[in-house]
Image 1: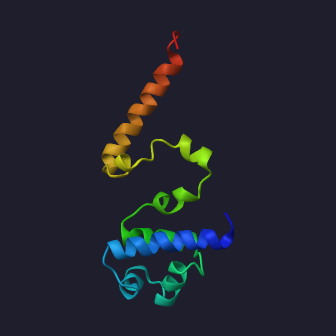
Image 2: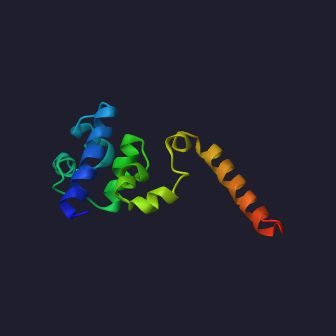
Image 3: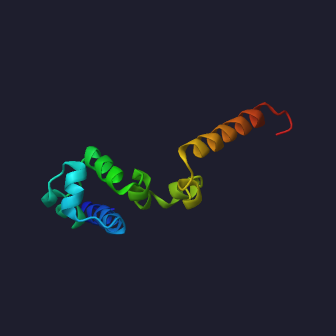
Length: 116
């Protein structure tokens, strides 16, 4: 994906979640300590921001970075990441941790099972 498409994609996602949260760019600016002009540039695809900016905006919109970045992954990689589905994302951190521990448990036992 070229730089312009990359920036446009990220900008559209952030604008979508800002609007879903009924926030103005000025309100986001207050939440993130980012300049409203910078937020506008990101949403229009003129700037991509930094990792720090990504985290600040994700926190403001109550989303995780994978929501913003997932569509930028190679299709083959996306197919391998089946755990990142919408249902899993909606779980609490405690529930996610429990599921991941169960997966680790089953993977560990599968490796030690002589019939596998």
